[in-house]
Length: 338
Image (cartoon, rainbow, N blue to C red):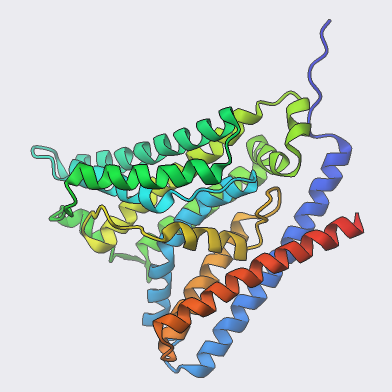
């Protein structure tokens, strides 16, 4: 009789997982308190900050970043990074835009095919990133930096550097639609947050994503296919980018090959500010959502109080650095108490 490989769900790992979840809750509570403090400060400084129209505006502004950051969370949890999401988003958008402009297709069918095509292109780019990085052991920083240029060049070549527009009204109207007073595109972002939370917290796949970030070799010795899970994390990130591309198109009503520049930095910032460790293994989707909210509230509030673009960039950069410093400090405290 052959012995089956040991499971990663040993009592020791179960206790470690419980401690990790407790720390995650405390981290999220701290991030939530920081968000509330920001809201209070800007509410005192600007009389229009808490108006319904401005709150709706904030939700609309952060929707794309939330979608991209959900996918980025999976990659960073395994200790990777994806610098290509902005360029891949542009490539997904022009592919979806091309499908929407095909003649002879029913509007509903065209929209459905455009969404599926965008997700497929994003997932394929993620598959390439993950497979090359995992199979050859190349740092994902290098691989996705290359994909950043490949996808951007592909988007420009696909459209000959021209933007696509004049999409169906039913498609364009979704970008400004509301559901019970909440922007429809923000509802889509929340649905993806809920799906991401379920996968990471209620499935074996999610537990193994955390385990790989904490101790990849232990997961491998337990008999699990580490390479497959790493690739899957990048595919999920790419698929989320595909969704984000279509949502972004509904907001702008165009598909531009130069869209998404710098979006990867905002997504990474949201994940880091949300408490996910750059070294992997620690973090949560809820923290990512709160991190994206902090970035959105900060940007919106600084505009309302009249701060210049240059100073806003400096403040945002300072917040990102502070979040990384706090993450390193928390990691040292954790090692010291273990």
